[in-house]
Amino acid sequence: MAEHDIEFRKLPLPSEENQIFRIFYVIEKGRSQVMDGFQTMTDQRKDEVKTLIIKMATVEGFKSQKIRWRLKKRYKYGELKPKGHRVFFFVKQGNIIFFRYARKKTDSLGDKFYRETDILKRRYENEFEKKL
Amino acid sequence: MSSKKNYKDVDKFFKAPLTPNQKAWMLIHEFYHIILSYMKENGISKADLARKLGKSRASVSQMFNKTPNLTIKKMTEIADAVGVEVKIKTEDLEKKNREKSDSYMTEGFKTSVRESNIRSDDWEKSK
Image (cartoon, rainbow over all chains, first blue to last red; front, side, top):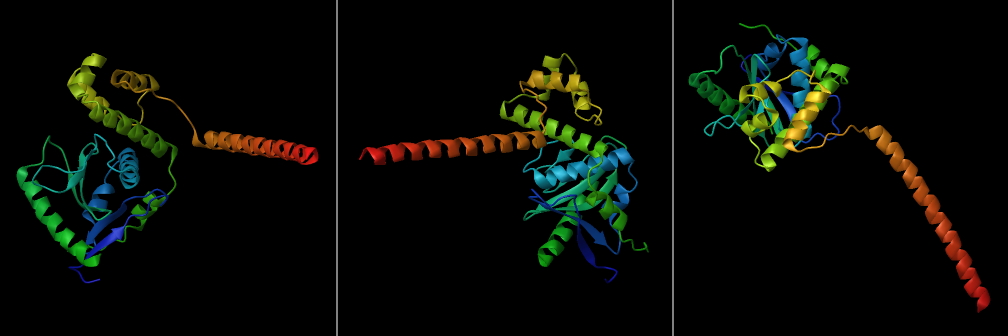
């Protein structure tokens, strides 16, 4: 894999039964921001995130305080909100792609951050479409 | 330049069967999904829920962020306030009961077929 390559790796779940969305995470230049962030979480948070993702993959329009499917009207991406962490994703043709991670210490990440995330999302979305 | 990682340990963690703690999280997620869906359908806001529970809106929001240690009592209080009845059921037991009732049905069907055959024999004899 070339250094600049972007890989969308399928996240395996305990069972593919009842799965309505496939889950992917982005690996760029050999690193996944999402999974590097995930590895910094406590065991309790890891369990919470794993089970939230399973629910997202198996329940249409799954509702939780910890999930925003679409952030603001102008941004077409969502976030997982386990305490102290933010994991960003977008949905594309029956696939959920996790592409960015941020540590969250204050109440809100700035607008600049969300704009940057949106640019990143569009780039990954284009790459994902090419691989579909 | 960042070094490459293969993330096999992460994949293994996600692929592994659910631990008891993860199963508890699944139940909590399911519970809040039901509550939030019901609230949305019935136009109940978090402020309404807070009023019914006699709590502040902030403490209701905090409640939704609990770890899997949400007590059954608290769960029932929330469900009551929203108007949802919480029941515990196990699919294994239900499956067994369904199988049992299916086998009764089959037996019943066989009996009724036998009876119907007897009746047809009687009818044949009477001809």
